[in-house]
Length: 50
Image (tube, rainbow, N blue to C red; front, side, top):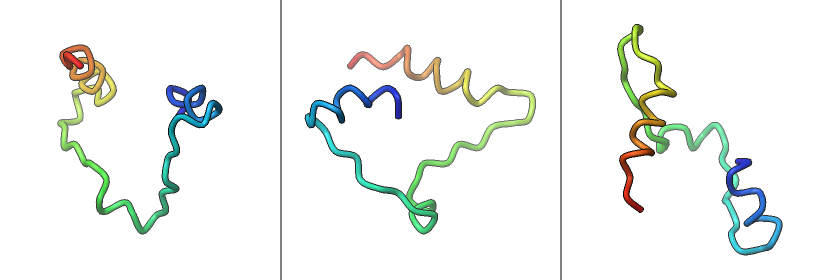
């Protein structure tokens, strides 16, 4: 959320509200217990060329 706060404050983007009912449409990553999920996401982010 903090990542987009400055864009939201400037009115450049609007994020739609999410409720508990929306959880089924959110991405889910299955990882083993010995893996750090945050480290996996950060590594995936680094590989993204956008």
